[in-house]
Image (cartoon, rainbow, N blue to C red; front, side, top):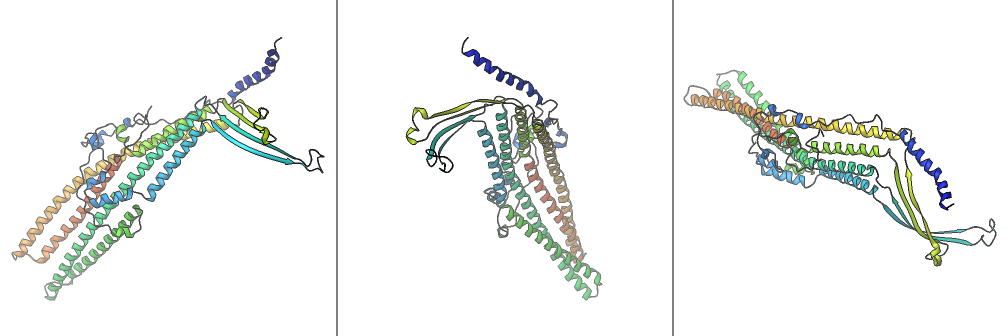
Length: 490
């Protein structure tokens, strides 16, 4: 009988044990566990009728410096200053580095490792416990080791964990870009509000001057016995009201200056250096003539949400791979001896290693619970993505419709102001011809000032609609979208 026969017989129990373990591995099953969420196909979200006639070419997507279209160099300088670095951007960048480091850890976990160690150990037993020659003698040993470890990725679980971490890192990268867009648009909106506050202050001061002239004229007529105190008291009330409006406008100016300084990452004194805005233009609203999937693919929040769906999907793959057997390779090679002189001799060689197979059998439901959590994480990411799609399309539509409505309102307000100007010219001509009084002139002037105040508010809202539309269209960001971002149903 050959020498291998006894060895084969000794290996039979081990093989039988392995086969039994493989059969029992079915106890840890993924049966009945699956995600329920389905990403919405963006092109199924109809919006063409809501967009109306505002459909142009791809050139309608905003540029990265979209705020320059408002025509105020001071606004350009403020946004450039903010983008150089603020606490908000620093936090977004730190989160990005954190996610990238996590992806690096996941990548390192799937690669072989090799470590080296050196150890010197000395033991001396007391003669009171161990008689000589061992007792009282120092027993020393020196060990040099190389430790190799590797777990081959047989089922793709390690790679899935790495790709999930990469997806999260890419989502954080998009979030960092979105933080810059949010900062620039918030500065632009605050700047528009500051422009409106200054315009309201000018209107209030004009109203105060008009009311003061009316009060002086009313006082003269009362002194001459031509009128009673009614018109005089009305004029005094108008002066106080105008002063209150001027104070409210100044308070808003101060608050907006402080807000802008904070967004720049500076102290409130920085806001005192901001001059009154001089916005020149509000471009006509336009959206690209493309499908919603491409339209929303320019938005940072949509792309980031899609990356998180991809990451959650790979997390499911990693959880499923944990149900299958795994192989670990481990090897220790080194030198060991009781003295340094013998350490590098042939007899000092030390070795240990080999493959180890492990597989789940009974784990108390841990693996199924982990997979169920991964499925829920995916469903949550899908729900967030679907909601982000809907809200993104709503923001585009709201901004577009607001701009269209405000253009019509501004046109109507301009016609009303022109009519009020004509009425003022008629009243002034009658006064100069001796057919009317100065009271008639001042009374006609009041609606004109109110219309000018209304017009400045509408123009500020129109500037804000421009900012909102540029932001809703993605702000000109160059985004790294996942391959399936435009076909979410896949």
